[in-house]
Image 1 (cartoon, rainbow, N blue to C red):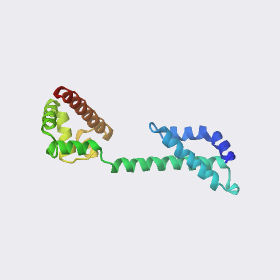
Image 2: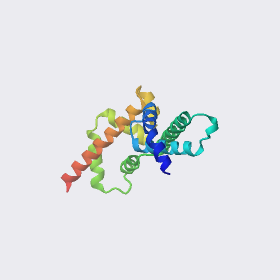
Image 3: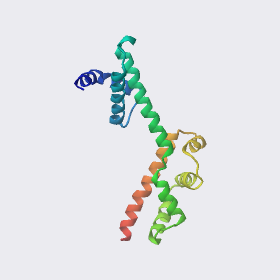
Image 4: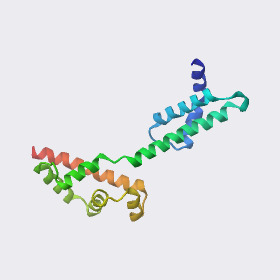
Length: 166
């Protein structure tokens, strides 16, 4: 195993290069670990008769990072944010104490019409972020950022109003 430690230290700059080329901007340690595993697989499966190790290692590292990106994208597409469950329960008034319902009504009334419309389209009518992005003429990331900003506002206002009631 000591030999792999030497190989790993030599190929850390290559791992950084692959991460930069793949434009990894978050979860650096997760992708760096996937790249290290890719390097380890290259090191264990390398056949000396087939050429140099460096290009093979590069492809294995890049493949591992891209596989990790694909896995994360699949998980992101399949996962449903927990806010949707909370908002759905609050809007249908199931198992919600009366004061919380009034707080939510007040908060929703204070929202700008455009923000309220986005919440209705996402949580009540069930539009996907892609569909909303096409409707609004902006990117999926822009819609997601707007939704996150609105939910953050609702949570902050809920906290403030909840403190005033008690």
